[in-house]
Amino acid sequence: MSYITKSPWVIHYDGSSCNGCDIEVLACLMPMYDVERFGIINTGNPKHADVFLVTGSVNEQNKNVVKQIYEQMPEPKVVVAIGICACNGGIFKECYNILGGVDTVIPVDAYVPGCAARPEAIIDAVVTGLGILEQKRQALANGELLKEPEPEAAVAAPEEAAEEGKEEA
Ligand code: SF4
Image: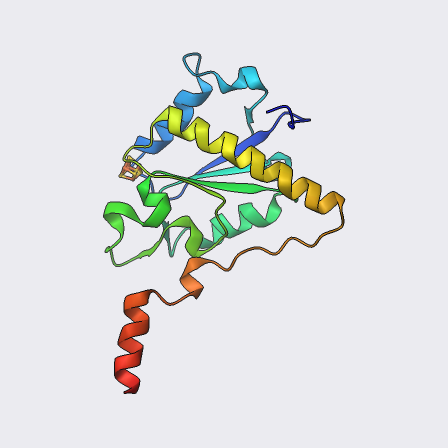
């Protein structure tokens, strides 16, 4: 952790969570886990944030909000998907309006599976994210262009690819 040179600020967004994971995110900020003692502050302004914490899956209603928050955050930045819903849609995956996990619309750097995700796991993922943030910061300082991975939705899932192959044959 000696590489951290400034207090990392986080911004939290509830996509379509049942609020279970949101309560665990808030627990991290409360006195029991108290991540503020490490300088981690929850901000409401994307322009001040280094780490984007997203709970819940992405749907037609919130996909643009997720993208807009992400785009307003300054570089370098990292995204943490919290809870299985944010990782891949979770129990809502098959719902008519659900697109999937957060990585269907923006790149994700760390995943926290679980239903609900535990505060210890969330803090662990944020620490992992801070390591990635520092790598990105150094890359930017060296003038290297950061290439974001393609969102997973852009890549056909294996079963879809197999179906397409069948149709072509
Ligand atoms: S992972 Fe579980 S607790 Fe978290 S938002 Fe989804 S259903 Fe709720």
